[in-house]
Length: 310
View 1 (cartoon, rainbow, N blue to C red):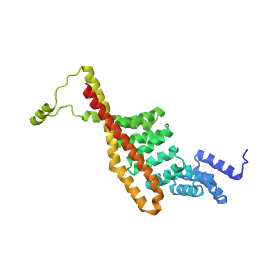
View 2: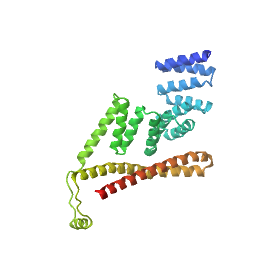
View 3: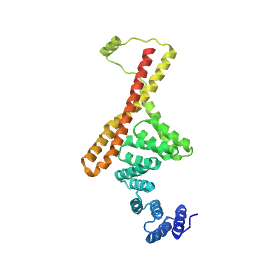
View 4: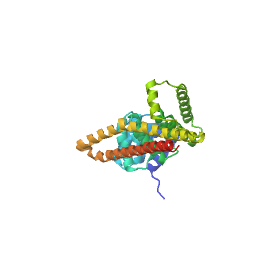
């Protein structure tokens, strides 16, 4: 049985004060303890948390920076430091700090979650989506991750995937007011977009019509076959649209940015250690692009086969 010491008693008392939301009192007690034991990791962690809860971000940052210097293997300290840097708007530094957390623990859901927040702030939506998905693989009950992921899809005008995310959040907590609001917003946008689709046809030029008649012929289908073909086309069209949007985002922003960062890391000796990690990120992006390309090809082939067999 561990022997209780004045230090452990002080830490336990500080923890109780924090639970009771008496943050100022906890800070005073922890600062006194650190004057006697400046390298006490538990005291530094609690002091950082107490300052954070009081929205004193700079003192909180200093505590966690000291803690990571004292113990570079302290994953939670790196994650908390990353969260504070995000709150301070220093998102690029946050990504660097959170990478260190993930180097120490690849299964830390909180690290992926905070990384996703930083990447979204840096407009790296595709990478942010991947980070949120990793967080949710490890912690499916992380409601805010479902909601934040849904909001990214909303920004990308992918209302279908956004609704799936908000529904997943509500399955975890049916009373979540935030998830309900997001769901209502997404459903409203979906209704508006459906109303904006013109119900009227569009005339074509006579020359175009003649050319189309030369190229095509009327296909006589049984109503059941026609309905099945329509459903197949609608299903695969959704897949094509989703994959195309994600591929465009990756090809226009994520991939060029990763290549640029990799080039800088290779050219600068002091950053070459980071090049390995950047290569891994690039490989992940290429794998994702290949996966989406296969989805596109498969959906296109299945639509073509459906029409040929009808």
